[in-house]
Length: 182
Image 1 (cartoon, rainbow, N blue to C red):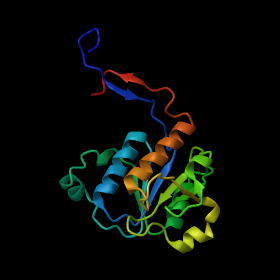
Image 2 (tube, rainbow, N blue to C red):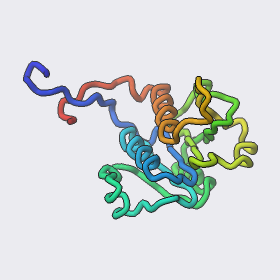
Image 3 (spheres, helix red, strand yellow):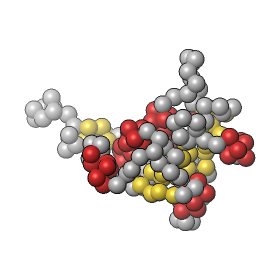
Image 4 (spheres, rainbow, N blue to C red):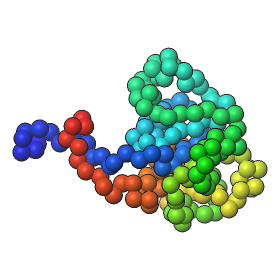
């Protein structure tokens, strides 16, 4: 409790405008996309969904799934990754695309993320297309693990990466307790 007998609020950093773009290519599992959507709402980062989805995201479907924060997410759908990149580039700013894979040779910790970077993650069952990873091999990043698992859960991988990117660019440095946030 605070001196005025109010419980503490929530730790908040100042909102940012489009720091990073999260792109999911053909996500298959609704709870993962819901968790990632919540993450995007919490970080003021837009969410781009590419290709066919393994579920519906209309208002009725997301309300039924308990995603009562979906209205806070800036979400866009695109037919292909190149369409998402083109739509993001329409703002005229520089954007770099990073592809994430469990089969990467380079760690996400070895990259200096920049505002506007595009963070691309593949579907849960197979990840990103091998041809895409080969064609853009210099842009493929992975999250090192210590144990014998093949890869991390999609929502966890996005959260780890996004918060590291936000940390690197200083978006989290001015966090303070907001007593009005419950």
